[in-house]
Image 1 (cartoon, helix red, strand yellow):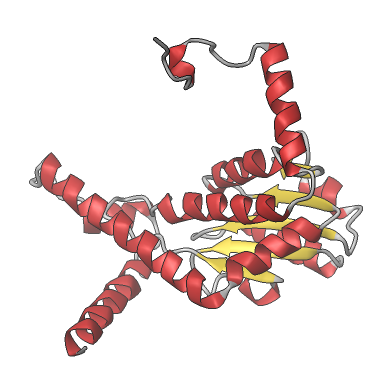
Image 2: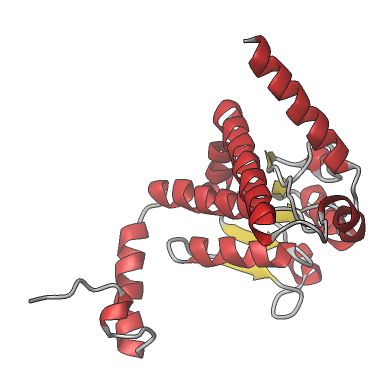
Length: 236
C-alpha cells in the first residue's frame, strides 16, 4: 500500500511539473535528448502514452463524466462540435463518428460554418462540444462562453480542471496529455472521442438503420475499394 502511495505521489509530482511546460519549445528542451537512441525514446513514448490513457480512463470510470456528456449530446436537437488549431482535428474526428449515427451534427470549422453563424441562433436544446487544450485558444474560449450565455449546453473536453471553460461547462471531460514528446499526447483525446461516440450511438434511436443506409449508399457511390484488402474474408 505504501509503495502504491509513493508511486502515485511521484506521478502527481511529475504531472504537476509537466503542466509548467507551457509551449512546445519548452517541452522539447525538457523532454528530447539528442543522445538518446530511437529504441530508448520509443520506450519512453510508449510508457508515457500508456500512463496517460490509464489515468484518463481511471478518472472517467470514477466520475461518470462521459455518460453525462453523451446524454447531453444524444438529447440535443442540434449538435455543434468545435476546436481550433490542433484541436480542430479532434473535433473533426468526433464529428465524423457522431454524424454516422446521429442527425444534425455540425462541425464548426470557421469556413462552412462559423461561430458567428452558430451564435445568432442558439436554442436551449442545442449542445456545443468543444476541445480546448493548453495553451487554450482564445477564440474557442470566447465561443464556448457566448454559446453558454445564449442558453445552449456546453460539453468541454480539456486537459485541466482549471481550464478557462471548466467553470461554465454543462459537462466536463478531463483528459491526461502527459507525453515524452515535445507535443502533448493526443492518445487520450482520441480515446475519449471513441468513447463518447460509442456511448451516444448505443442509445441513439435509428442508429442501426442509419448505418445500414450509409453502407448501401457507400456501395452505390463506389466509395471504397472492393478488393480483399477492404476487409472481406478470403474464400476457398
